[in-house]
Length: 222
Image 1 (cartoon, rainbow, N blue to C red):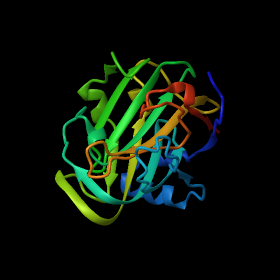
Image 2 (image 1 turned 180 degrees about the vertical axis):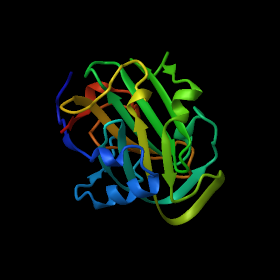
Image 3 (image 1 turned 90 degrees about the vertical axis):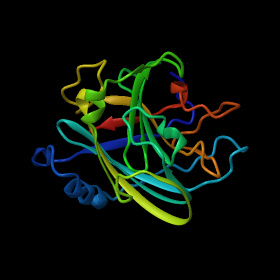
Image 4 (image 1 turned 60 degrees about the vertical axis):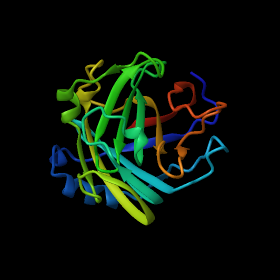
């Protein structure tokens, strides 16, 4: 895979006593992690609006843990069903290729935690995860879990996400320790008053396209 401009994150393991802990507890543990990673690259100048976004990441024996912190002027959460098109709302996304090839999972979450998950090679013909698989993903948003139409103002919100390894449903991963994966992290909002497309690792395409594993960075599970 192309390693041009490739970022790397070392992901710390959280003690097994935190396995399947309540998300309120895990949110506080993630707050204590010093290293925060900005999602601050604007790859496409036709969409210059840039919310302030960063995230923290860790893992337990059975879950990948993420916490995203967002400051933006437009928020919306229209969708509340599993595998709804949440990218149209105020949305955080995590793409991961466990085998470091051109096949990857796209985890997508609107700002109230509605989840979408699929696997495949390209943007088209992706295999959606089953409802049962997606239901096992846990999320906790400071905006709650009820839908709302777009709001304009100065908003700050955060969301904690716990992704079971079993949701990597085309793989049989029991432990991430020592594993390196290609990934990218995104913030978007396709149908907001100010649509935006932010990336953690830069993407060099003419038009917005997050489904480009050749532009993924790396995470290393310590």
